[in-house]
Length: 77
Image 1 (tube, one colour):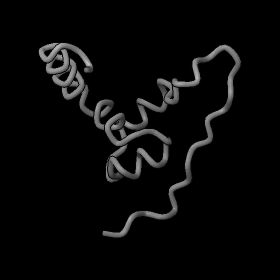
Image 2 (cartoon, helix red, strand yellow):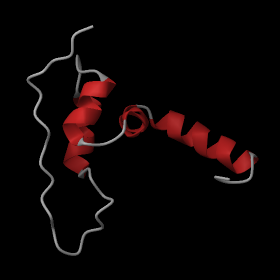
Image 3 (cartoon, one colour):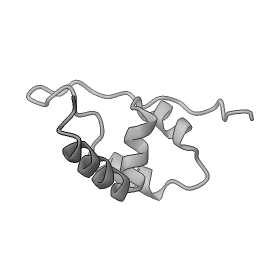
Image 4 (cartoon, one colour):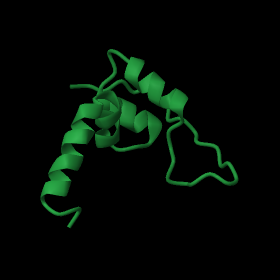
């Protein structure tokens, strides 16, 4: 399967006072939810985040289920 090669990575500006771990703005999250016809892999590459992050944004129930399973087994360890 060929990937769309014309996708350009978004540049994340350095803003003083913001946590560097925060990569996606609320506008980016809204764009990801609205994106149709673009694969999770392509979106992850475009925004510079993991595929799992894109999956959690598109389907928040997955994240909730994962957090419950994590609590049941005693945390992240």
